Picture 1 (cartoon, rainbow, N blue to C red):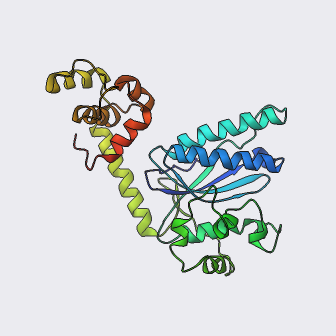
Picture 2: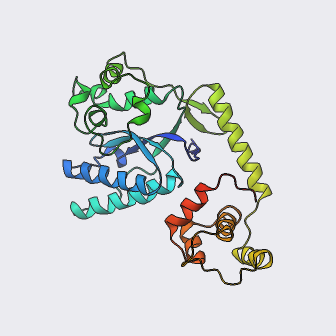
Picture 3: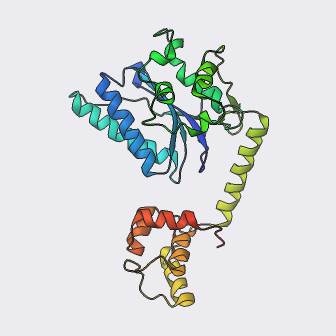
Length: 286
């Protein structure tokens, strides 16, 4: 069977499932899980992503994450590579730790966000590890009820009057969220037909725009900036963000499809400042 297509965009919410290779454990000790969570939080924060939920079992992990300004696949690739390297060094092992590819299912925020979050929190109950989901240490439910450390609890708690009501929601009959699959596109999603249609429309639009706007070379952008703005030397290091720099950053990102690292090398300014400048533009017409 072909691998499902990963649909991602800023603001998209994903249920991510990470498994050990051939069902083997990916955590040997509590310290492994602590390292995993702390690094996941750091990677998410540095890329504008939000962690809404997690549950770490010995041989797999469930995550509920909202994509920020960096594609989720890039964040997880770097994060999981770092974790595996650390884990192998710690336990003096070598070789693969995780399955070939993590599973990612797009979640409809309006209809299935809470259902998926509850499903994640109830994994220890389903696995017959405990009858009380709140007693399981490696689930974000404990952070929701006590003090959030790795998660952003605001979205989930906004649906309830109190934390107690949020917890009671978990005690209702557990239902496994239905996964929709479009065979022709091989897309997985928690959502209804309307949500699926929205996703397909977004995909088709992005494909059309990609065909129309083929990447151009950075040198072409530099020539354009020189001709239209008289910008002969690309250096903004000592100056506040200017209109010229805004235009340059947008063109390098959207028309040249450059990474933020490469853009920073060209503008001689920090990656973070360029990302903020790009995100603050009310509308990018180019």
